[in-house]
Structure formats: structure tokens, C-alpha cells
Length: 429
Image (cartoon, rainbow, N blue to C red; front, side, top):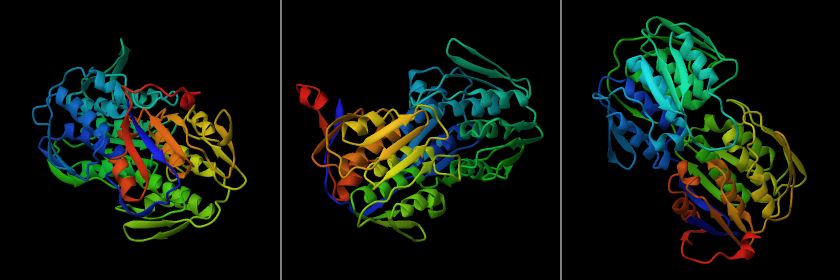
């Protein structure tokens, strides 16, 4: 029942430090199961999804120890092969990486169908196709995905569609397989590269990560390692958009500017000023926002995980903007919440037409998923009056300490608990 209460109108000013990349951290934590020794992982984000994956690892006797706020130690030396069917699995999409990791370690894995944000059908057919190419048999029975092989052998795997999850899972399954595995039409996202770098630091032989052809030559042994996760490009992009939406001046630190190129390009097209430094970007906005068109695409295109945030910003831009969702179905569910705040948006399938308005007005809203929740936070910061956002557990799956970070930038935001308070129907209707 906890919610965010935001009083909009304050310009964000100051410095914010971005944490480690959520998507990289979850993949690397699962990959540690393949190691024969203890791994130390730095720059881990303090988010609920990391805690959930740590609990899932504990179910298979992998020890996860917090050394400090941003460093964990993972000991997989006593990992056991058993079905991973706890309810936690259904709460985090990245739990399916344990399929590839356990298959790679034991030639057998059984994991519940994954959960995560509900914004459309996200099939695992490309994962299963890849496992089969490595010599594994699979079945889905009573909500469990079961894969097994007498012996995993390298092979060519062509993905029919670019899939980050499938690319990561097949890397995990093939890193100890006999021979050479070649992945074609592979995903090129920064967290795919980060996973490959992590595995290589343990002794894996992975080449081509960051291109659409990745070659993995299987090894017998993976040692322990100490590794630092890349910065989170989506968290960075979210604060960049929030600065623009409020007419602010924010220095976003601990970033890899190259990973932000697509986001930076669209913000500059809208009239936002961005200064790029070695490990930071400064975002300033003074004057009207200009319309622009956005199409989400696999990396290096505009990331789908930034689509709700940029749509919230475009709702305040002059003129008509078109947003084309090129990755997922049904990712515009949050639009109804923005419209309740006064946004003028119409949706037809994967296309949203956004007519800019002069202002948004605070109201009672609900986060439908992680990035949709971030969009509502941005809208609330820019709106006049008070905005209440419920279901903030979605937001905290991917944003470390977001309330305090925004407070440090001058936002008027606080957590409230209305569990025992009567519902104000004027807010709801």
C-alpha cells in the first residue's frame, strides 16, 4: 500500500549518481552459477530484483553475501541441481537465465515460467530453439520449463528475431559445451557485452559480443573473479528525461556516454542541451520542448525501456510526435494514466500519436510496470499540483533509492502509506 506523493513544479538541479545496470547484474548473478570458485561482483544496484535473484540462488544452495552496499560475493561451489519453482521466480523475468546457467553446469535444468513486467507476450521459443541446437531436449509441463542433455555440443544458432534473453541464455548454456557455438542475429545490448566480459574474466572464450555474430568456444573450468557491473543506461536516461521535463539542470554521474547515444540524440532533437563528459552527462533545459518521432529498436537503436519516459516528455512538447514501439506488444498500457493527467495521446496498436499540451495536472495514478512507473514519476515532477502513484514496488524493481535521489535534486516527493486511510474517491474518479 506504499505510494509516492509528488508535488510538481520544482526544477531538478544538482548531481545524481547512477547505479549498476539492472539487466547486466541479474545476468551476471545467474552466470556465477557456472563458476567453480567464488565470485565478487561490484557496482551491484540496490534494487528489489537483485534481492529476488539472490533469494532464488539460495534455493539451489548458492551463497550470496553482501560485502558492502554495492558489492556482493557469490559462492556457487556447493550449488545443487534441483527444480527452481519458488514463487519468487514468477516475480522476476531474469529468473529464466538460470535455465542456461544450470544447463551449462549440470546438463539439466528445471525452472518455473518467469514473471516480470506484464506488457505483452514475451515468448521463450528462441531460448528453447537454441538449447535444442546444443543437443538438449525440452518440455514445458505444469508451469515448469525442463531442459536436459546427455552432452551439450557447440553448434550454429540463428535467432529468428533479435532477443536479448535468448542471446544471454544460449551464451550461458554454451560456455562449457564441447566445441564451438556460433550465435547469429545475436542481441548487441551493453549488458550482453557485460555478461561476456564477466565470463571471459573467469576463463571463458567468448568473442564478438556487441556484434550480431558471437562465437563461444567451450571451456572445462571457470575460475572465480572480481568484476564491476556497467552503469545502468536506463536509470541514467530516466534522470536525463526528468531533468528535461522540469526545465532543470542535472549532472548525471557514473555513466558510459556511448551507451546513451540514442537517448541523447532524441533529447537534443527536442531542444535539450546535453554536455558529455568522460563518465557523466549534464542535462539542461530552458525553453520549449520540440516535437520528435521515436521508434524503439534493439541496440543501438532507441531502447524500448526508455519509451514510456520519452512519451511522458513528448506529452509536454510543442506539436505532434509519433512513438512507434518496435519491440514489444501492449507496452502502451500506461498511456491511460498519462491521459488522466491531461496528456493528449491516442494509441493504435504499436503506434502512439502524442499532441503536446501546455501542462499536466497531478492526480491519482497507478504504475502498471517498471518503466511505466518511471514515466509517471517524470510526469508528476513536471505537473501542477499533487500526483499520487501506487504500485511503487514496480518502480523499485529497477530504480535504486529513487525517492532520495530525487529529493537530493530538489524534487518534492515522499513515500506515504495509506493502508489505514479512507480512499478519497475524488482522486479515483
